[in-house]
Length: 267
Image (cartoon, rainbow, N blue to C red; front, top):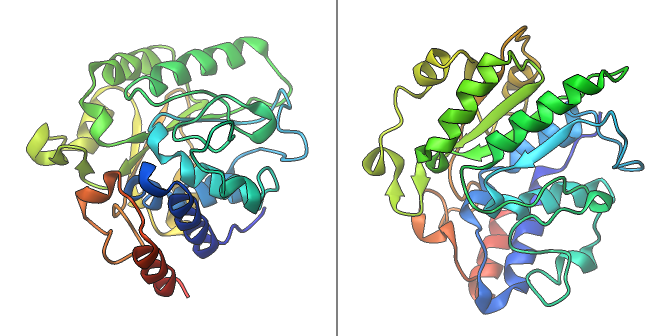
């Protein structure tokens, strides 16, 4: 077990955002993921940074690919990226891209970005791993945004996962209540969200997405013969006051002053 420093993760997110300059980055939805990523990589997943391609490793599919800066920040603490890497965010030839690009050496399992596809991919990977009958059965974790659950492909995948009783599949929803077009309940209402997942044959748990103990207990909950969904209640832009619950930071530009102001809040 490795305890990842969530304050450092947020500082690294700001560093990447500032390095991207006028290109801007998806800061709000990356900040809401910090504790989720810290718990997965530090406390829950079977993942050896010294052997990131091990066949029996757990898989993490970041379906909400615009939150990848948070994944880079977590993997940096595991030694798969350096500070110098992060400073090349969104620059030509950089491995720090705006959305995940498959790179197993650096811990990125799958390319993503077009929303609503990750759960379908997760179903396929979970089925494939089951058929391999490895000595240790890997778990597939799919991290999604709440807004992407507007996509019909999510619910097709949810039905398939229940049909095949994929208890090696865990969906995690970053429930920050904001998507590109505004509040999720004003775009296409999701509530009662937990009931929906349960009606599709999943075990479903609500938890505080910024409480590491609550997240760990949820991820480790037993779910025999069915997939599990963890709805993690979060705050978009968590940790930076002027970004919290502010949809304009879905994608934004960090000026020198904003960068310095944000760093002060994390000191």
